[in-house]
Length: 316
Ligand code: 13P
Ligand code: SF4
Figure (tube, protein in one colour):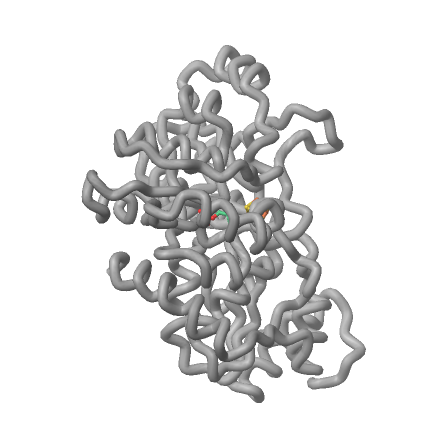
């Protein structure tokens, strides 16, 4: 059962046997391939995954997501071995915010506290005052007194959305998620003309023009909850298409239309190349060989833990 030579059909069984043998769990984000979500012990949004990682008793955590998520798991549960199926699974938002530039941004605004979106590296977390995800960002902004100047990084779209929602002014870093920033307002409007009763559901990493026409804006898990509980039958879903897998499992009878993007690609819908780097084959290999593993200096873990833990204590 632990042999390296597996076929597509035998991976789920082989992964399950390895998990049992090694006391390992697989944590997967909603943007993972359907077959990965199906073998995962837990599927969730960034906040739920961080909480699962922090409280896990397993010896090995396999993070089926992107690098900043696996780093977060290591920071929150440092004695565990945290494996990532593909070390190159990055994030355009995290890449937009490099430590030296962020240090300068903070130094130029010394009276501002930094609220930083979880989609960033451990080094950026260590330079931040508090972390947030899309599901708790509003609550975290509102936890600061009105007199406290704030800066928000690295997602410009989420930052603008938070300013609008909270009425708080914040200095914003200029980064975007290349997946959510690519949605086409013109194509969404054309879809609305064809499906006049469709509800537009969007992730807050999307451009302001999309958020302005959305009936609901929220994190991946909030989008799922909205679509499941809504009386409406048709939805234009503005996030990475991996989310459709959990929705189809729960509400097969509703019509789910992936939000179209500007460029014409084969499917013309949004896929995160980084999230899709993970495969069952790579998950099996990383469990078998226990590599690649996330390694971070103790000092960096100590510094990055503080703002992450502040977020968790405000997210109960
Ligand atoms: P959430 O699942 O927390 O909404 O995050 C979406 C995302 O883009 C993760 O990379
Ligand atoms: Fe980063 Fe966007 Fe991919 Fe999420 S969907 S991992 S924010 S590039």
